[in-house]
Amino acid sequence: MNNTIWKYQFKLADEVEIELPFCCEILDIQMASSISSGMGEFELWAYVDSREDRMFKHTLRIYGTGHECHEKMMDYVKTLKDGQFVWHIFR
Image 1 (cartoon, rainbow, N blue to C red):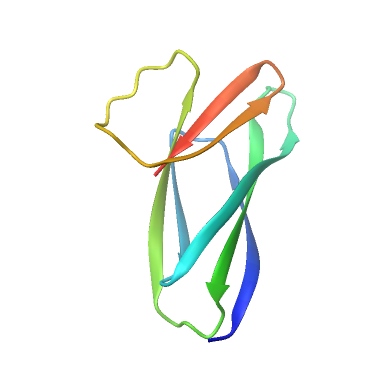
Image 2 (image 1 turned 135 degrees about the vertical axis):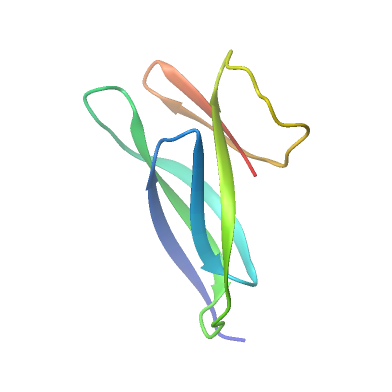
């Protein structure tokens, strides 16, 4: 196994799909920067086997504080502050 930490970037959306190697572990997600509208960009770090050819689409759902969550119980990943906004990330 050739383990490496990779970084991915994505923009704020209700649902985000990120393609990662099949066997990986999401280590952390942080704010990358804020843009003028107050909606930010995110960076995700994952521990991966860089020799793994099989890819898997991970779906992240992002909710603001006070927003209705339509899905049943999901796996919690992270809560982030973006200026006056607070985002809660699930998968």
